[in-house]
Amino acid sequence: MRIYRRSSFRNPMEDHSTFRNWVQRLSAHTIRKYGERTIQTQLGSTHVWVINAEVPSGRSLVIFPGARTTSLIWDLDCGLDEIGNDVDIYLVETNGLPNLSDGHTPDIKSNDYGKWAAEVISQLGLKRTCVAGASFGGLICMKLAITNPEMIVSAFLLNPGCLQKFSLSYQNLYSNMLPILIPTRKNVRKFLHKAILGKPTHQISLEAEDLLIDYELLALKRYKDKTQKPYDMNEELSKVKVPTHLLLGDRDLLFPAHKSLKQAKEKIKSLQTTHVFEHVGHGIETYHPALHYIGNKVRNDAW
Image: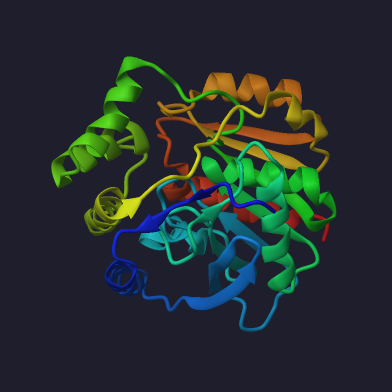
């Protein structure tokens, strides 16, 4: 596996400490202690947060986050309670994103992210598992489905970044570029309200929103992001043979739902179910009904 790009925090020791302080605040917010695993892969060190796996249940869900996020945001306002305490949950911190994993990444258009994901799952001691990915994470799930389909019970794609090109609408570009060019709390909050959430249906508590803003400011100000962004996998998706479920928000500015739905139905022959949640933005992994939907499917899968 060839290292194609390298991202990193500007001051790794200091910035990792800031990130761990953020995790402590999240832990106090969720009243949950997160287990930790650090494994060695061809992309270097990969960090994984663990929930409910002290005594393996036989059912597991491996989660891959979106770009410029940590997998821990899936648990804002205790969202992962919706999956159920009878499912072992592994929150993978994808290499190349602002987290505790090394910043080495492969060429995103190769299948190497799929091979890396297989390494992670194998070293977690899982033979078969459900996988879920939001945005960038959806692409990783599909890469894994191509390279190692035998590992996947079912795949859940949440507003995935692999079904179409990033929207070039003025509203989307403005919402996304504003906090990048001027990373202030005000601008990050505006981005969250315009593109990520969908008030009043899709919203998070004020405490969770402050946590998310603080994380985004760390990622924007302190992380030197060289990682490639997701792309439209198009005909590559025809190679996917694993049971796949698609969850979309109808207010997703980044990857409009109607385009993703059309592409998925045309390209993913093993597509099992689709669900478009009304008044939900791009950050669907923070929307409890979407996580509840996943939890029900995981428990009903043929293990």
